Image 1 (tube, rainbow over the protein chains, first blue to last red):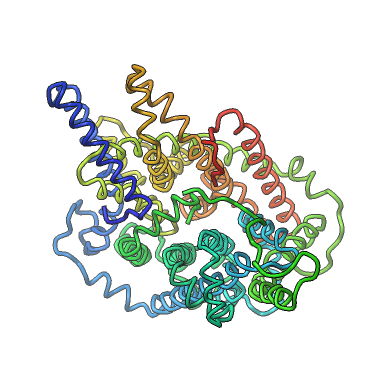
Image 2 (image 1 turned 90 degrees about the vertical axis):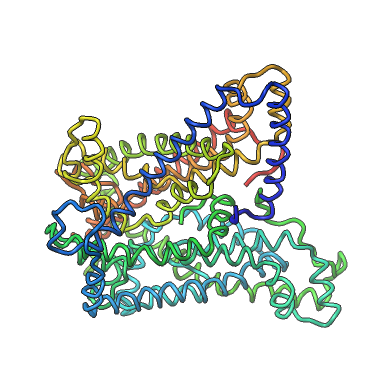
Length: 311
Length: 316
């Protein structure tokens, strides 16, 4: 149960209380009513069956990516021999290195710079009075609901006029302005601002009395307390950028300028005999997400539970 | 945890009298604006300007180069009169939404109920259901082309029950059901939302219902369901918005085919804008899609009063 947050651990203790009460109740009635045991069994069978169904596509993907070309039609469930050589073959294609690098640059900028700037903006909204703040905050909320498909045509034209098409600039510049131009930067600002609002103002006042300016107050007092929210925002920035397809697909064209998600298409052929390489590319696309997921699971779950925002 | 959307109050700086703001407060004003200034610049350049420009373009016949001729509302009328594919794409999107959104919600709710039982290895099951939804993208779309291929794993599974599965994505009839099946694989986020909601229902309510003699079905109907209606409402709103914007799977898996059976509105907009360079027309369709989303969301909020139960507090 490592992925539970504080707030949930309260619930957990609630569950424990509940279960103690329940145990007492069953003890009174005579333990293990057959109907209840049958119910448990049904739940178990359903969970095991359904989770296998949900996991199988991943299993098939990994297994196929490790199957030798000549064994693809051999209907092996687990490949024999295990063909790591497929991955070597993938990495012989120098384009993959370009795509990886591009994806890392775009995602890294969004995660590091985007999150950093979001903290500043959230701080401005959470802790300062200025004319028009109310209206600007409502505008911020409204941009969260604005679909990208409305702005993509003008953005395309604008980037064309600026000579930004087929470069990484449309992806690495907006984060400096707190915009994840294509995956909703407003969400991160909103989430951080909400979190900062829950922190007592006395902290700021105390820091001010000690002579700290607003900048030092932010980094020495607020940011350490906001770490969980910052982690959530960073995780969502990673997810939204790494897997993004719509914008890179439209704005990037040269083979060496693509990202991993868009480059994947190059392996999507109609020839079934290449499916092992295609699935290898799929694994390379998904693996970073899975790794981040297991490292930062609680931030995924919290982000979703907080807002239900799609990644 | 409820996020109270509070736009103004509770913000006094603690300094300054009622009549004349001291220098310090005036300085703090500028500090605040300074902190949000990157966002204001970003808003103007990457959101507000394109948003307004898109509206303008939707009344022109611009092809991306050359003159922008003002054509009034021609774009808006011709999508309903001269472009049968637009109407078909609206129908396709509606078909997908009507089945995949409620279906996915029911399935997610069912999984959340299962996970809410105190079972062993619950974290493992949760990951199995949740992980697909965070990986959704090009890679999983390509994966599902093969899972739902004529000799794919899904048809093998059907074969176990003696059913001969169709060639999903090559069939005009089955391509859309195939995409809907795929969408059921990515419901983990809804499931997590429901699970969080289920776990926050106070035990006291169940105890009280039990004392009143309610059985488990009645408890689910009269305690659990009303208490989690806010979560259901949230997933409904987000589900419809996302579904209206289906693009990647339609492009990657079927590219709108066969015979336009899976041309979604957004795919049609994309084709017009970036394949045929009908930028004016594409902008008009984008606006219609946006207004449709807006109207549906507002209707949902209007209906919500009748069935969504907020427990006296400000939620979300």
